[in-house]
Length: 222
Image 1 (cartoon, one colour):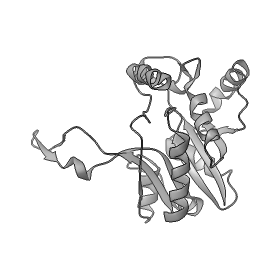
Image 2 (image 1 turned 30 degrees about the horizontal axis):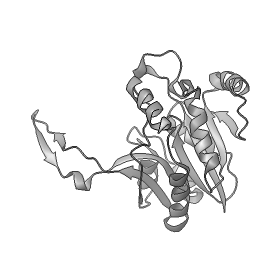
Image 3 (image 1 turned 60 degrees about the horizontal axis):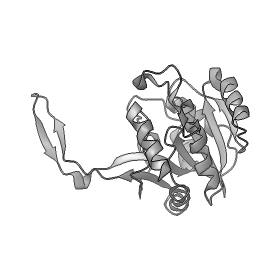
Image 4 (image 1 turned 135 degrees about the horizontal axis):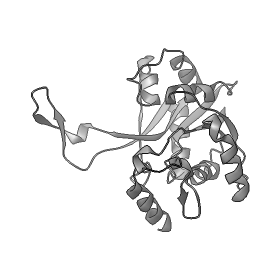
């Protein structure tokens, strides 16, 4: 069965107060997005890589690839209005039974080993959702303005990759978009499939704030 990776690059960088989208910010000499693609290319799974990118950024990305002599094979397709639409666009170019990993472009520190593990679990169980458990105490706000404690041992912080058999994704993404679809696992779960947790990596951070870029640089140097 073929392996694919859909890299979703739709961020605008608003939380970092930058004009340039987060996936294009420089991290140790090259754009964040290049680190992300390299991790999938280095994995034993060797997936075909589909980059979903805002159509207005295609030329900019092509110029970056030329500047950095970035030649890892990948297909660039047009993104949609919502992340849901972007993933759906990515699925439309996969025309065979496959195992498909979906990954945030701004998680550049994902290891090739985690990528490989996600494909292996998805082959066995139908899907694999990378996640870690919180180390801090957790509380939930109630309607009265107060809060109550939750058992952190029962909670997971969801990451990507989220990897699925294409049959699950194709069925799930026939649904009408809902704001409750916060990630691909929530879309697939709504379609009636059980979700399987794969132990993630604490270093697999998402670049959201300025400090995250500094932390990613530190972790890369290690």
